[in-house]
Length: 240
Ligand SMILES: [Mg+2]
Image (cartoon, rainbow, N blue to C red; front, side):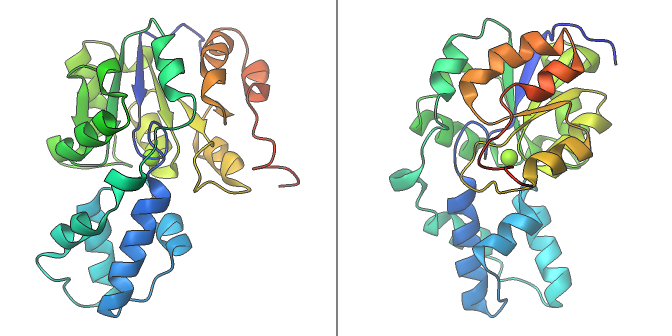
């Protein structure tokens, strides 16, 4: 792939900008288990990370063979302890402040959740109104629709976009959209082997510390070998 400096950075939100996946997966697992669909937080992460809530609930209903209560999504939202626990990803604010490139957010979450979580963690000013939600498109990740919408609205061709993602579904969506994508492995939900899985899904590089992203962007324009080494997760992939 020809290496050019990206004209637009497209950030996933959950698990990249905000460290929300452990909270979301715990609440989902607890709420489903109480209903009779037994699920651990780890299973919730493994099965549903990066996928929109409506798609998750459709998968659960299909697997379970019964419909979920109509107020299930509202019940989940009520229980999510985001306001008390949610943190920005370590180093995200400083990294965003130092990036001169245009940037936006493309997330599987609902628009009001994306905006609320970014506001809560102090990251919203870095993106202004450039927020794109799966509820704006027909098909969520791993389909390319959301990333293509973001590129179109930001008036940048997909080939000039670079996506930052933590999930397999997100990496697949970026590649399907014809975009380059790098994997972020610094979230609390990530574990050994996840970096390799993101690379296998099509990420051109992985990194685990937000302050390594600018260096990695330089590397994207130089050589594949170099970028694979920058920010390589240490503890997360040691021995994997
Ligand atoms: Mg994510």
